[in-house]
Length: 293
Length: 319
Image (cartoon, rainbow over all chains, first blue to last red; front, side, top):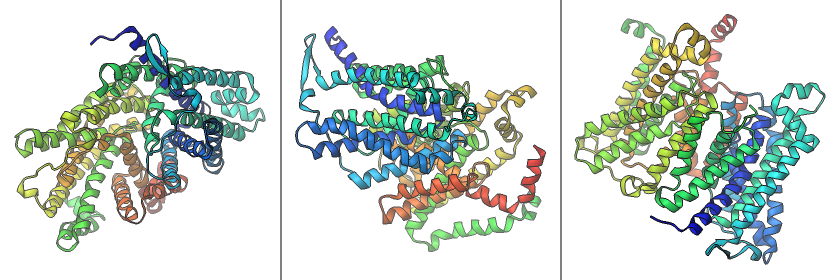
């Protein structure tokens, strides 16, 4: 099999654009894991809610403005759902062991999954990209979808915004401190409970952003949470728990191995990222970058 | 040993339950016989997980893979080869145990969450191959209509076969649980460092525990094929692994028989609540949250504490 250079580069870019969605979701998961120490399986369900909400909001408006409004509103809706869940349930359980938290968040994901089924039904849904991002551009002689280009641009923006948030803002600094030593932060007279709530909501908001961004590229369906969350956990683990740049590196590894898998052996394309994860975990069990745990 | 068994308080109730279970197919409708058989299969799977998680303290996050590997091995042997039935029945658990040995060999180098995640990625690798290899495993369609010999042809015959195998496995698991090997595993769960200091090869024991547990998961896989005559890729998906985890949690981690109760609860919930509403997982989620909030030791663990408050107090003082 031989491929032209343009095809390889295109496939690489497709891989990177898919990685960007993964990165946005995983950065949120990693942030929650780092600050709250909660392995949140419901993160995938929130991503799914984000995608379904994008579908509904896009349909409400005529033309392509709907998608842009959805891109703002859908993640906010997800953030609201997560805020309710955090205040009502999560906040009572932070002291429990990880295994218990894992099963607890799985229970939440079961409930959210069925709620999505009740609200949106079991049929496939699809969202079309706004007119501005439809079609493709020609790149080195091969055609490359505009929407993927948009994703490649937006990924770094989110990364920079999150990075600035954690190092520049007060809440970001406190949450970083809470990730290292939450008792000490409490002793300093800071209301840790609300810091945790805010950190949780920000993490979940990112899941909503990921869900909104992925909506035009896939068919939105029940069960998309299950495939995503396991990938997200593996990415966070190979990147280093709680490390945002680790989530970026992990996502790139996952997305690029998958897209080259599609090129070379489409039938088993989904196997390649898992092989990459196994190799990384065997060489660097604690992740590629420094973990905050 | 038998004298002690007869004198034990449990002898009479257990005998009565066994007699009822053996006589049941004569009176009960087919549907209930089927559900009971499914409960045995699921309970065996949950107990095999509990051997590593509850008794061994390992984060065995992807146990369903071994169940699926056992089931697929026997289904593939019966449909693609002309080998006799019993070869398939033995090969199922053995291949599952070998898979357990290979995956476990990698996993025991790591601890806790990392152990679990490495297992999920290795397990997902197997799932992805089974899921996509249409020409061999049938992909996401699975394999249907595995033919069984005449002695397993009717549901009642399958029921008795599954019940007998289940009981044999139960006795074997109890013997392992009470053996020096089992005690060592439980000691490693409670304090791995101290065990290492005493000169126990912790990794070797953990690997042994994984192999034994995956063997029994393979047996459960074979029994599933006997009951359902089909296999599908969801048997290896991680969602099932978490479901088995939930069974252990519902029943109680640290009890021996807890997972049986948990498996029965989940199967009954899916069957009977699933009849009335398609949203049974919503109800499962709510029950699970209630259990996590109010009965962290599981239903069985809760009753055990009620029955033996004194012994718990003693053991706590001993710590």
